[in-house]
Image (cartoon, rainbow, N blue to C red; front, top):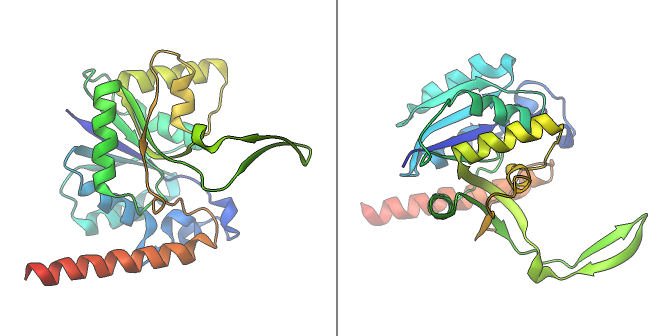
Length: 245
């Protein structure tokens, strides 16, 4: 089974409240001395099921990012492709480089700014998608969720019927290509890949329990939590190395 990971990393990061250029964009902000994107790439390089990684970037970032990847000396192919003006366009551009592949070929799409994904969770959601054709990570919300209209509460939604979608989201390649083609034909823009696949009404998208640590670094305040998680991961690795030596 071949699994390709797509990392859309062409976003401008407007919610960060910083200048939208160069290393000020969230995917290139430094965490433990390395850009967030690099941390994310490292996680997927550790996943046995992953055969290659495709990173979708803005054209002006390609050369710089290529240097970052070369410094990592990756054990698997890491290809850089030009992204689009939106996440959907970036993922579709990356899909376009895969061509026609066997039905067993799976594609995992992951937010470039979710650097704390556990490789074991990646393997779990890949295994589920291999069985069903479509699977995502998700967690049950801990807060009460209200449906509102013009600041007025209209309903309280039962949490047991809700999940907060995470990534990676994994699908059969042919299914994902069909979903993107349908969305482009209908002019539909989704907030994630699952929303595009759901429109096909061909398979049910399964949910695998995610992790509260699998945060998406979106706002400046998220960096404080990211630094804590990065420190905990670093200490955990150091402890494992000490025990092994």
